[in-house]
Image (cartoon, rainbow, N blue to C red; front, side):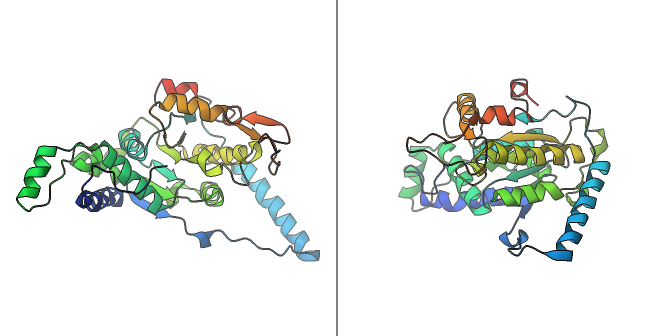
Length: 304
């Protein structure tokens, strides 16, 4: 993961300046952070008449949901995709380039952690003239950073597009599922851009870091991943979005990294123990096989 330490070639003032610039860009978006108290669970199981009443209520709610659920567009119209991994800055660039109103991005990190990783990602890509820096320091002035990175240019087009993007931070699997299960277009308060009705491309519902969020947790299994994927795709179809998964990029070759991630083995059942040799004690299956039931990997090569 991208750390928050200042790179060796970066001036301390740059580390102070970058968060302000990037925060300004993010503030142009409609940001939401799901607090921990939004997920509540009861530890007491109802008994007797109360339990029977709640059971009937759940049956009625489920039946109503099935009868009114939008089964989505014809197959292939809004095909769900898995795209190669991207760094935080690449993810935001992709979102502003391909997203149309009311595209929504769900980032599976806490907001502070994502901002720190985004800052370091931009710093590592930022060129700097050594002669320019030395001259500025000789005159007792702080060296100025050249804003070559697209996110630091803050063009009018970039700012205008960012205003019509909805961004949510979901730090746990429970937060992610709860948000997706209750997502409706009426809850998205982002105003549409002028002539929004003329747009042809479907809006995107993007989850950044879905697989990483499940890894090494209680839901790191085919059951857990499949349940989250089902909730994700259903939320996208229900609201007319195209579902897109992207993972954080750790290496230079994003496509190779995607292949390795999809080839990783997970247990079929949640709660499967690990043997002494590190393998699973029960049957396992590849991540790509699980997600392939819901998402098209091959379509990523053809683009959005």
